[in-house]
Image (cartoon, rainbow, N blue to C red):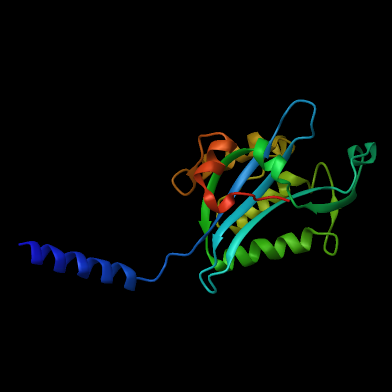
Length: 191
């Protein structure tokens, strides 16, 4: 009996080690809305690319190059915000979804396009951090409806997309500290 258990255990170990590793990237959608600070929507991506095994740990948002009264009345220069660790630490993670390598490529291409070398115009009403997150959501395969009254409200907008995609996204019902602690691949994310 003992030898049969030992053979089964050895077979199980061999079978499990022969399976290809499941390497996926997870994109998480965040908001930041604290009194006295500019509200913000941003994303983090972590995991491993299937095609190469390359580890991924990135965070991005979109913001005006400088916060001035001009942004209230028209277009201003925008830039990709490489979200800082301190910002991630106080943000609110809403939901995450696993994405394919092709979807990861599409999101990182969008990041490059929205950066200073691409279409870097920031518009509070037409091209802000919420629009940036909305586009990342679309490229991640999610259903997105841009409700005009929510496009300056990062938390409310992100929650509306969570509702639209119930069952397709992993809802995060915890603080950023708890989420980061439970997600070792995100330790130290941000600059």
